[in-house]
Length: 187
Length: 315
Image (cartoon, each protein chain N blue to C red):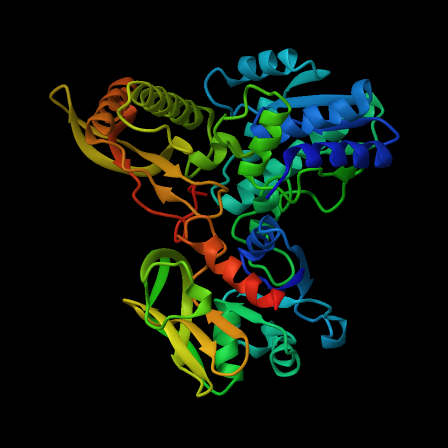
């Protein structure tokens, strides 16, 4: 199995690469300008971004085309998650209370992404922006005390977004969440 | 999962494939560069010269410890004293990025000199993933210029080789243990050394203050861990702040500087949490530091910030 990590310039892009590789899949980091036709993979991860990237269309390269044209599973993280909401009809912008470091995540909806994960757990975050309006095609899966949309799932496509960072060591159950995503990529 | 044995075999093959001439390796005695030195040494033997630079910014006793360690590991090595050059270049500099860039460049100039003498074409560094990630480039923001990446000068005479570039600290330690290196658990100590633990100007006097405080933090935490009071943190050290405050020492007014104690738990340095050191241990550290540093330091603080939002080091 082969998963591409689309690099939006985040501090933890290489961590996503490492977790996917640790879980036994082939992981490749690619720039976010790689043409859609060149994507030969079972799933892709849209990484976190450079400062404020999620709300800055230019910094996000071809992420929009990947969302429009690919049918493989997609996991957006942080900026990738925010961009996904904007691109698909919702909105994102400055957080009233940004979250840096540890925060508690509460799972609101059971979903394959959270299989084997308790209903609340500690995750690590680093964001100034967040989703303000959920796109209509998505279901909200989780929240934290200061952020309403910590995770979401497209109603009819294998597209997921998370605001927290399942790829870093300090996030509890991060490997389980990635394992669940890789299971989706297998199918 | 990461397989250290497979990594070692393929790294040695790749090094032999690529390096046909002499090489010098920059070794600070930390786990990353020491592992790189041992790997390189296994691959190309006497074609490699390991260079340790005494930049005047190392911890207490570190120069002789590293010398002994490299001898024990049987790598062909040399200790170069460049402390005066480093202090000279850092005179009057207070900006952390500028410090890192000056140190990066100074290191390279020393290595170029040593490489010329040894007839080497390659410079090997123990660069690992967080070094180039945090140094920025392309879309990625510069968090801090690691001396061995963002601190490299624009022009240099040597071809760079970085065999550990995709690894994190926990993976380097796995490689290190597999290589049988008994120094695999040394705590991380970044290349700019004590220069980035003196906030403000890096003078020999300020460095000697933070060196002494750092030694006390290390001794007390190692002792507390051995006594079962706590687990030894991933990284623990002292930082000297330029902030002065009023105190009273021996019935006399004191107006001294501030030491911050930092101790964090991490796996790979990319995220970290502060360690909940027992108060008794913190008190011992505080007392010893203010007694040892006399009128120079009369206040000790403990840093309770995670990464993010902070980084592990202060600069």
